[in-house]
Image (cartoon, rainbow, N blue to C red; front, side, top):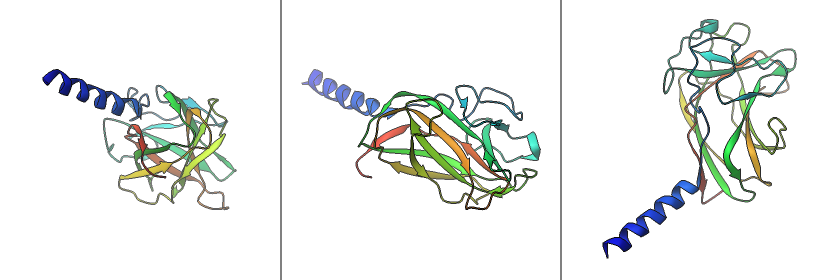
Length: 191
């Protein structure tokens, strides 16, 4: 009887792990804080993408929500913005519901980029293709870290996740979004 119980627990545990997708360096660690630096495990997408590893550069001194560092992405008033991507540990499957949690904030101290903006998240088969908008956050105007839980149901399979700072409206402004502690992407029951 004990072997049967252990086997059942192993199957349940294995299925739970199989339903999770990990991101590499989801808390943007491994590099000391500095501006214009790509976090380990991530790729630049938009021309002019020079994310910042914070705190420290640009006078942004907010403590991380987790670990030692976090990511800062900006928008500019010249119709440009920053975007990064990563190849996922396994394929996100069309028609399934997924959940992803992350800590978001913005800083009023980012010179020339001190307005709140939105986060857009895309899925793609290519590293920077923006093939499908999975979700867009509300305006991130909180200066303290808040954990956001996003649900999405893709219309196609994809292997890349793309994070993009984006304008809150048609007005092109200099803004920023701070990102830390992205948790596992998990399958969910609804969407």
